[in-house]
Image 1 (spheres, one colour):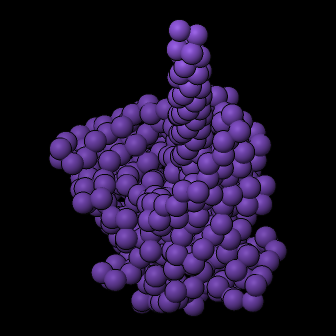
Image 2 (cartoon, rainbow, N blue to C red):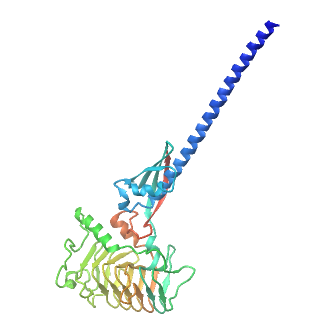
Image 3 (cartoon, rainbow, N blue to C red):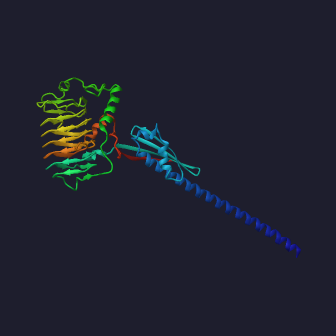
Length: 384
């Protein structure tokens, strides 16, 4: 009987040992599973934080004050960290030949995740999707015809549109009033500075020398007589720069009827185009008229391209413009940013954007207030 008891004790000990081994294995397995699940959860949260960093940083491509060299500044990282459990550690921007890469790294409870994305950056419609845009009020006179294109044509005002009988297809053209964000950039200073950079690098783009902001001659009309000469004059693909003392608007002579070319007319001061004046009306020509002052088109003038003014734009009777009209003028003294008088035709086109790209590179557009000036399409994605 005692011998049987000995066998029972040995058997019990073996069974207990096996049970302990099994329990240890189960505990280890459960622990590993918990650790794996925890790591996976932390990795997933790190991924989402890194992805949020990409989303945030991709909206700041053109905002240089948000970047310290190639690195997104800490205050911008904190904008993501303040709404997440983990930490967005860094976002690095690198410009490559055919786009921009962003590498975003985040950490959650000791687990890091990085995402590297390549974006194909292209000029967005931005302000160019509007046929007319004004930073303040606007008046559209009787029988003003507004014609949309496939990529835009809406009319935009941040302070109201006084419509006296404009003609437009409501399915294609929308009058947008009292919107919260202005869409007209400070274009003159942006373009002037970038052209000066190009000029200082040795590539001369100016027809006239803007190295000193002074009137190039006591008689500006004679200085640019070659470009606004009799008949049809052509300054090719250059930048014509006019400095005006603003005591009166610069006006080409009345007997000079046209100006052609696919370049930039940059005016520091006011300019008035006389009755019947034609500006690059050929189908393959687009021009940018960028004015630090006011612009006036008188009766029966025609123009292809974009006109920007830091002050008011007035378009008198029977003017025909194909392109876009933009005023950054904040209304004062009971004036409108844009005033289009009777019987004029505004046909939307964004073809003039190619002039920006010709001078400043593919995808370039002036920086926008409150709105992106580019579109970024993801073409490569890598996680590590």
